[in-house]
Image 1: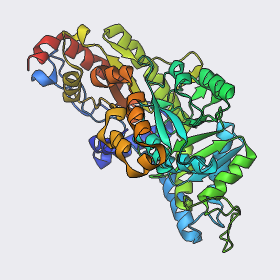
Image 2: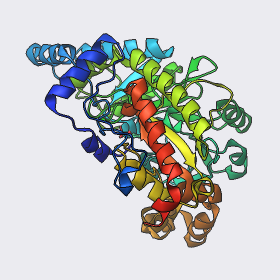
Image 3: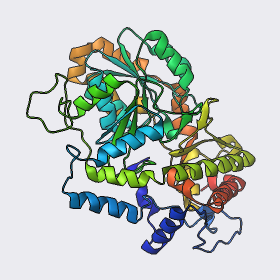
Image 4: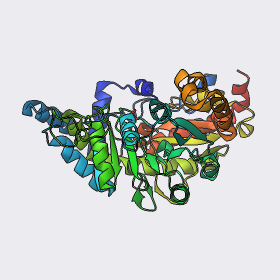
Length: 453
Ligand SMILES: *Cc1c(COP(=O)(O)O)cnc(C)c1O
């Protein structure tokens, strides 16, 4: 989710503390802090709002975070080298994930960057990724002067269309990097089969997918490594941070070295390193303490999101014209970092998706269109003229690259259909979900009047 969206979620300090207390005890209670007059008229047409706009605050914290931070402060051991808090977090995170190894790093982007460093991804290599993702996925390939190859979106699931992956593979393909977008698993079985058949390592960008599961096993465990983000908007939050999980001991060591200036050990070394390329992407003990505290509520929050999402799925299906993103059969749990659904204007009297979003926001329901056409973004297409890329790949290859990157299904999804709700909204009560449903119903009923605005 966009980092600015947190701004819409500000509540008064009192309300905030109330909600923290409620979530801290794990009891779901709605907070009736506004009057609701259901005159049936949408807010965009002058009626009453369906919701106050105050969903659960984010982040959620108690004295536990305060104690953790103070403890690190007083210990004087603020960095991970020589400290114990980050290592404790890493072993608990690995245990929770059922993974053999975990390495904390400075961000989700750093996690992917470390994985790419450990794999020695470089100029001339191609990286296969979904077009429907956060820009960091793309940036990591470009930072290594590798060629990002976009695969079109499965319009029903919003995930990478695994049936289009094989035709994107060439002799240069170095990494297959699906993203579990919105926190819902991509089609892991199919992707794994392709990865094994072509002997191309599978790297899961699971930055949004904390606790998501495929056939009962946590995502991030399926390929060579999985990357997670603890950036402020993510379901596990320490302001900025990330982690890599892997079940390969050697790969884990190489990742550690890369994130620690090529030094393998756990202390500062003034030697010349262990021979791997490297940089400094270490996380601090402060963030480790925040993560340990935040992790104590992760499972309960995940269950609440899951329950509310399932309820919302039912409401949307009843309303019609709004279709929750499909989960693949192997999915045993989505992390619901985003609640993604498709909007069909034909069933809303031709009201455009963008107008629908405007009307829903007016109801006090935060929502967004989400990611766009990354392959057509000037930021991305200008790569074809980048001097280093032209030197490495040649002008002809870069021109062809622009054509290879066509993603018609993604074009349709992102310009006409996609709508997002955010993870914190799913931490609310059943009543919050009912009000979302009510808002959509009102808009549907008055769609032709709204379309004329
Ligand atoms: C958030 C995110 C990242 C990057 O994580 P940061 O911690 O913000 O660097 C990468 N990929 C996806 C899909 C993300 O959502």
